[in-house]
Length: 131
Image (cartoon, rainbow, N blue to C red; front, top):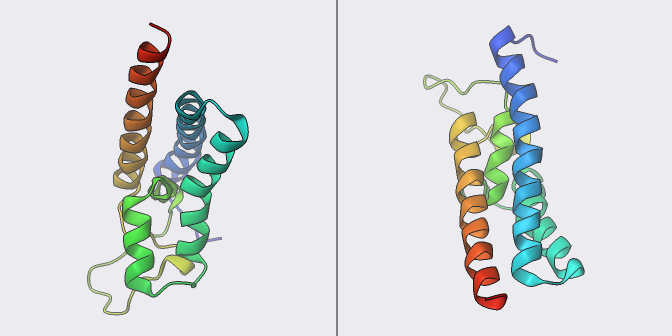
């Protein structure tokens, strides 16, 4: 493990807690939208975990993997990144080696956006269904 500053360690720990809480809210919103437990669990895993595994698993080309980790809810895992990317390094930072294409809080903001979208859709649908 690489040495990190105290603030980075606090960000990683607190960010992981926030990541888990946000994914739980996303799962509840998906359950409300789909009204099927198995479907909600499947969509939740496919939407959050599968892009992460595919993105870091060297299955896709680096450009495609970076794009996937920028736009999917898996971008939230960037909050756990503790190794900085330096602008003077000319080699490609691959997701497989712990580098995310977004800054930690930017990746977390992408997950927040997906969660807000799902939660808003769940609120609209539950008001229409149960009105």
